[in-house]
Length: 392
Image (cartoon, rainbow, N blue to C red):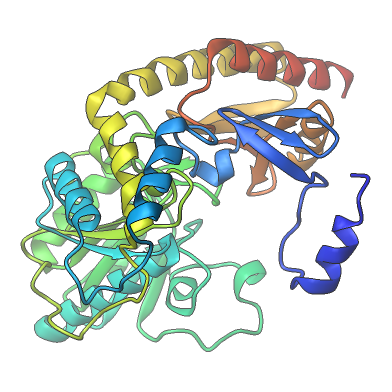
């Protein structure tokens, strides 16, 4: 960077982010361009947000069209974009009702209210989540998470929350009981290191739900909307959640989240028991309609094709460097590599070579690219990774 932007940022914005030293000028499809004209191949996609790529023409058209009509009127009015996107979500997912929010964390907070309401009606107090999970940075969301990095000196957190070991059937059997109101699950843990839920573990959760009548709440904020090979990651299992939280890719780059509710949960909250000023904003709904239309019209086939190619090439790379790469992790276009050593040096060297990725759980390289990536882009990533590993 040649400008004074870094210093200006330090002087004016709270220092809570570890930013990459790139001053963004513009972005198009799977590429980001800096102020010096450098082109970066983007395998991060705004952290699983820009599912149709950057500056998709249909997203831009939807923004322009809606902006010329109105931007914001509040939820005191009936709005066609909001109702239309809700109908599309119902059509795709078969859930009963939708509540719109502005983010994944906000969706988690709303889901917590539904969980507590269910608990109050059925004399149940405990909410359960799992190690390695990430549900947001707001107070209730943090209560569902472990980790000093997120929670140090911020407690006390919500009472009656149990955080159990991910994929441990023994801990399920010891802790889920008649006092359990709800269980929050990330079926693929994004920030936790791309850990995938074990099918037997999920089967035990459904078995215990039948016995104890608690809610199953699926956090699909990062894994939803087709990213893992199915519309939701829970569809890889024999399970049907009562509530699903989504956000990130839903707006194609514009902030929007949602809570999906089945018939059992959609009547738990009534008038004035939950609300939002901006949730379901017309602009965000308009871009969300574009994203859902692409998924309805066959985008999932493209996702599955390119993700299979990416997995194949990553697995070939593992065979070339078994002393450095421990395993392939994740599903679909929510995947990566686990290294024996820390992944951050790999991320930084890839950045030097104009490829954007990131690391999670210290040793995992995470890839959550736009759905529009091509074979040639995968080949570029693999070639650069191979070169880096040969020299390390």
